[in-house]
Structure formats: structure tokens, C-alpha cells
Amino acid sequence: MYKKNIIYWIFLSYAFSNALQRVDVEDISSNRILSATQDSSGFIWIGTDEGLNRFDGFSNKIYRSNIFNEKTISGNRIWITHIDKQNTLWVATDRGLCYYNKDFDEFHRINTGSKPLHVLEEEEEIFFTTSNNGVFKVSKKKQRINKLSI
Image 1 (tube, rainbow, N blue to C red):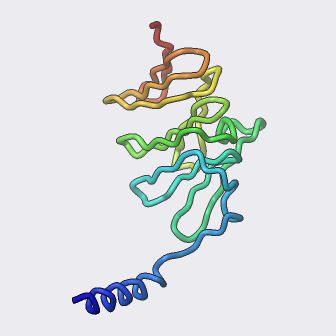
Image 2 (image 1 turned 135 degrees about the vertical axis):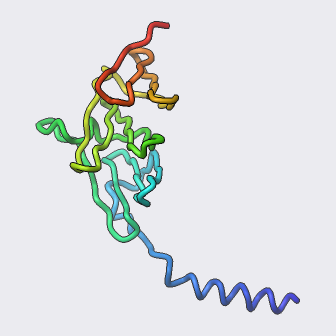
Image 3 (image 1 turned 60 degrees about the vertical axis):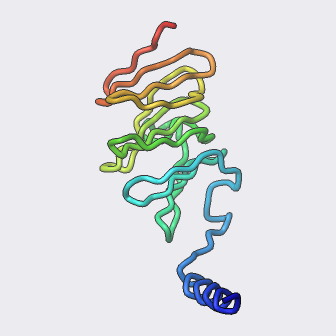
């Protein structure tokens, strides 16, 4: 029985060895990973201290902040990556919150005035806390943001 298990394990190891792909550290924006999540399309979103990475299983695309382009992520230190029930990616950076528009491969920034700390989804709304400015509620229609008084 022991010998059969060893042979079975060796067979499985060999069978899956070609299916696994090594991702070099040079392929991502930084080796300091702060967050990661996977969307329903299979993309793995990796937040680092030097940008956001989208990995499709073969290649990596890096998203970085650009102060001259409002359609980029709001900051390069990615603290939180969250996929909501509508498969929208929300990204909390050191400079605010943003969400990804996959149709145009761009981000929409939401000015919070400070770093978001936690993100919570409830029905049609996203709630997030910030380091200095309290709690905010974002409508799922992404057109309205309200600061909640506590």
C-alpha cells in the first residue's frame, strides 16, 4: 500500500509539473505584496507598495498612478483590493479609493481625503473607513459618495 501511494504521488507530481508556471519577481511591480484577489474573469489582482498588477496566468500588466491622468489609480501603495458582487474591482491606495472600469481599462478615483483602511460591501453600497476622515458610503451606481456622521 505504501509503495502504491508513493508511485501515485510521483505520477501526480510529474503530471502537474508542466501545468505550473513560475512568475519571476521582476514581472511584478514590487516583491512587497500588500493585497491580492481574483475576479470572475480569472485575473489575479496583486496590490504592492509600487503599483497594482493584473496577472492573467501568463503575463502581468502593471497599473501605476499618474498625477496628470485622472483615469489611473489614485496612489501606488495598494492596501486593499476588493471584488464586489457585480465583479467590479475596488482599490484602496495610500491616496484614496478607486474602482476599475474593465470596458475602458481605466480607473475612476473617489477622493476620500485620506487612506482607506477597510472596505465592506452591503447590498448596493460600498462602505469604507479612512485613517483621518471617518466612514464613507459609495452608491453602487458609483455616482454618489456620502460621509457618514457617527
